[in-house]
Amino acid sequence: MENLSDNELMMMAKEGSEEAFAMVVDRHKVGVTGFIFRMLGNHEDAVDLAQESFVRVFVAIERYRSDHAFSTYLYRIASNLAISELRKRKRRRLMSLIWLRSGEDADEEYEIPIPSSDRGPENDVLDDERKSVIEKAISSLPETYRAPVILRDINDLSYEEIAATLGLGIGTTKSRISRGRAMLRERLKGYIKVDENG
Image (cartoon, rainbow, N blue to C red; front, top):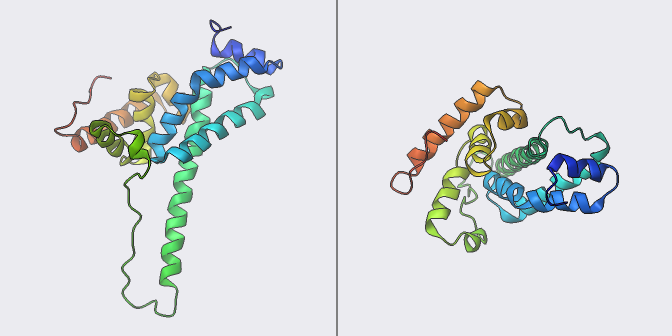
């Protein structure tokens, strides 16, 4: 069974093979969790949303079609969940700022503590300083560029797969990856050389 493609395993899972689905999950759980972690910068959230991605694949397994790469399908779900979480965070931050400013002393000056971008326990996982710097640089990219760069340079998807995953044209995909890499090079000066040809 290990020699079967993702699509073959998914078709078996569609017929009721739990073992086939477990093998698909096993093949992709590290990559998906890593992708979401780099999008969100939080390991617990990444694990939760990776599990949610596989749950969604399983729940919709009857509608699964094998005419595209499974990884494209899976990363589209993971990407949508990660982007949704980022938007929720922004709304929560905005609502907390609005709440702080809506009290009786709304006209007074407030020093509003902005949540630190430093990862807490995740630094234990990424104790190597170089990796930590790279992770921070990636997580600082705007989400428009972050997902394409991660999918290309870390998850090693083709431009076509990334375009399909994110619902973009090939030209836009290449442009966003190029722009994202340029931003990374700027942030990583002195730490690492980022491949421009990818």
